[in-house]
Length: 580
Picture 1 (cartoon, rainbow, N blue to C red):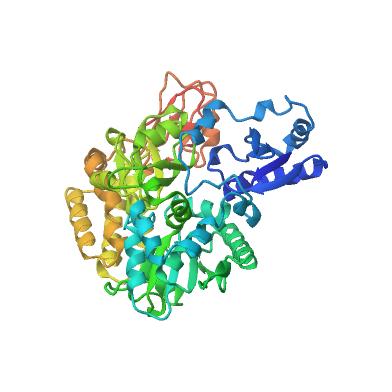
Picture 2 (picture 1 turned 90 degrees about the vertical axis):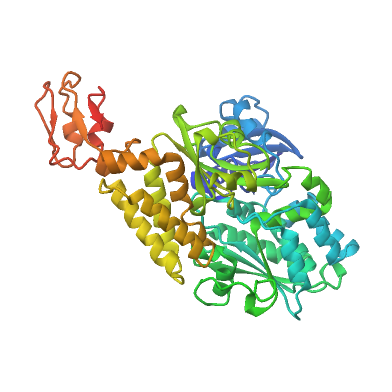
């Protein structure tokens, strides 16, 4: 038997390393202990799978180090030893309702052993390409598949590859954008940590197609485990002849290296990324020329993100038509999403394009935490927009999401319930983009700051008539005048929240009230006299002694002293404190 412990970042954060050590201490010669990456069910970590050969016998969830002895008992024949920590049928649906291509190996193979990747058809696509296909045939297969860039823009992958292929130059570069900067997004990190060889193989096929001799993975320095496993995978691939000179005995040679980025959100824009790669400050270039003509070191270059490359080997092995058969007319194949926020089952989800937001949030994600009311979902991170409950049946494809004012983005999907203030959410994302602006163009550098100032005034109860119209004017000016995608899309969260939740802006400005009861400066607390038992618990919890009263007598909140921290509200057992 084989005991497999999930060792993605989510699993390790939940305690998987301790679980592994505890099982290792109990292990006998009757079983093998190994690791895997993130299978996507982050809400159930730590996860331990028990295999007999290739057959999955048990999937154990929320495993603790104290469960190690029982796991060994099960391996030794005690069938009921782990029944209470086995995954439920309801949670099994999380994976059963997905179609996994980019994530097909994640949580299944050991990411630190190339043998396991090779055993599951790994590098067969590369072998097929080098032995039976010309670069033009590879590009044509990608064209047939309809694969669009999964980094956010949705630009046809084949077109970028073909442009780089046709560019004149003695040396070309292929670059992977793994600079995943959206708050709440972790798709690329999980793929690199869990299936690094799939990324390498996809990049090698791309390099062959465009004629590149060197490949670079630009990855966030905040992803140490991803960097460690990718470094190991590159070394393994070199040792096995899949990387380097005359790959698999062919005339094709390509080397690969990693560049750890410092974490600037603007480096998700391809020309800013190139500047960073060259040792310069990450700031976008004017286009044209495009990277396909003049990119890294001003040589022809191609840039795609991790998920885009993660689909390539599957497409080559199964045919572009098989990939195109999934999805919609405008958006082919599958898409990976990081499902986070006020969701019961958070994690990684891969579904065919054409499913609805409802399918993902309620069908796969299990609905809203504590069965609260669904309010909105933020799609596309800081560059995206908020989609309200009435558009929950929106189809997931580039065109349909774009029509709502949001974007597909790289795949962040942040779910919000009715306790979320939409003005505060817009402020949060504007604060992020204003800080991440590179400062090169005035519209983005100054415009986002002016918008943030207005939003900050509104959530403090200092909004005034005309603020909404001024925000809209600034939004369109910034979108029209900004140099790169960061500035052009930064207004999206503001525009969509105004479009769908204008009443919340008006309540903040005109009534000085936050309908979601989230903005601290607009809250007030009072004690309902006939409900107060005089238990004194609230006064003991108050950090500023703003609550007055004696034992067994109704208390009073001194509003002059109250700092609206909510400690009294959260501590009252008799629902005697009202938040208004």
